[in-house]
Length: 190
Image 1 (cartoon, rainbow, N blue to C red):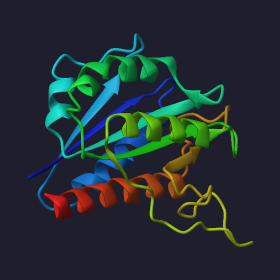
Image 2 (image 1 turned 30 degrees about the horizontal axis):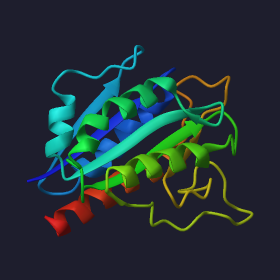
Image 3 (image 1 turned 120 degrees about the horizontal axis):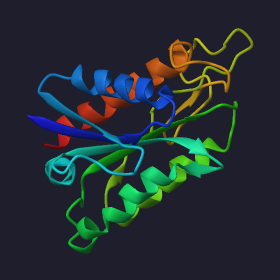
């Protein structure tokens, strides 16, 4: 069995959909056991979450991008992970990330960079999307990796869109493919 932990925060429900797409992609790989942990509004996780993350083969981080970085609730989780950092308990686990914001750019890469830095501090191995962008005139939001994320899965959730409307299908498929890639690589390394 390959174990994948997804830990994320969602403020309005859009990142929930992205996290569920990552989960579906990871779960589509034979032998993958996927644990989905949503950080609550107070920045807390269920008590068992850190223990499960500590046993996982891969950890996928997610948060909306607020004001150029992850939500404070995610940062609280990251700060709490320092106990695992002291012992390098997450060393050599795969890591990846996903984020969304209302704007096309929205400084999403700053959030991915934050996840990457957190992973590097834990001595993890970063996995990017491995997906070329859909960057021709005929491409749009329904296409995979339309927002051209290489370091992580990026999504756009317009500020007036409900979670039923966004992220759009291309962004959700990009998230699904990221989850699948992480699970496949984790299985190969097991």
